[in-house]
Length: 202
Image 1 (tube, one colour):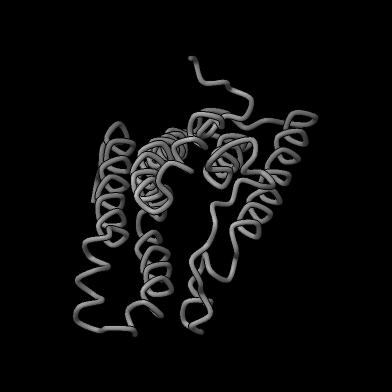
Image 2 (cartoon, rainbow, N blue to C red; image 1 turned 120 degrees about the horizontal axis):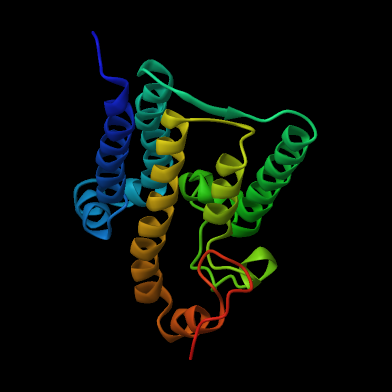
């Protein structure tokens, strides 16, 4: 199949948009409630882990498009810039793991729910959450954008990641406000969403 290379970024963005819609629907409170009505306590225990597995498996074909579609290289950095960029990526990866651990890694991937050991959490505003409300999204973006190589396809993919992070954070915060109420509203007023030390204007 011959595809115009100029169309590759658009196809990647469209595929990611479809992934985002499906991912948001499976994360919705409405679907969770419907699943709970059908499966009862089993849904509470296993929904999260199946949600994570589905998100990973459905993400694979979207990511594959970056390499499958015709591409054009933009740049490939050499030392010392490539070393600096890879160092930033390594630090970002470490901070992603720290953020996930502070969130509760076992609960994040659904194992705690499956074991039936989850209680209602208090709002976590410690660790990296003191500086930004969504550190995992922030450091995921720095990990991708500081790649020492860039092409039109990877740029489109990274742009999709950034847009998804922003939209996903907004969507997620609606649920967090519903769950934590005024405590989360106060947290929003005091702490930037994605960029640390970016004070909200009064």
